[in-house]
Image 1: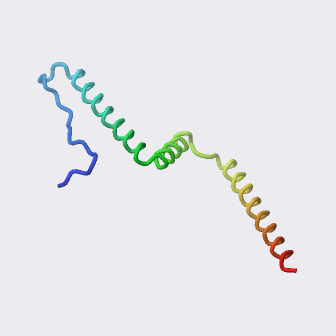
Image 2: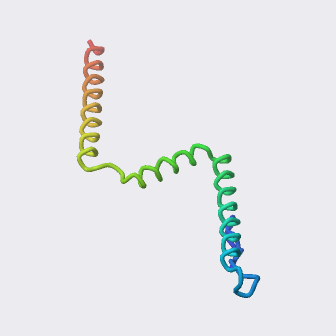
Image 3: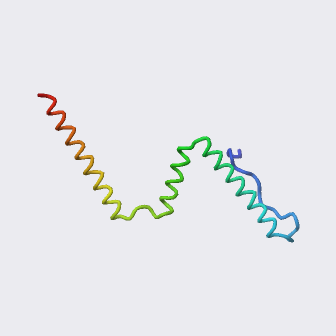
Length: 98
């Protein structure tokens, strides 16, 4: 089976035969976190807009998204604005045809 690009094949192991297990785990976790941070930084440099979008979406989801009442108010505002703009455009087109 082929390894996916950017996926590390490093596996945690204990070199001391059970002794110092916490130290080994901390070292592996630190290495894994450093690798992950490096990959995120590389992605952000290559695709900055996608990185900003993903960060915004993650923050939105972690924050709980929108409450239903807020969502309905936002949808109502958007629909009213679109309807008003459409009506004004149609009025402008009908006035220009005379």
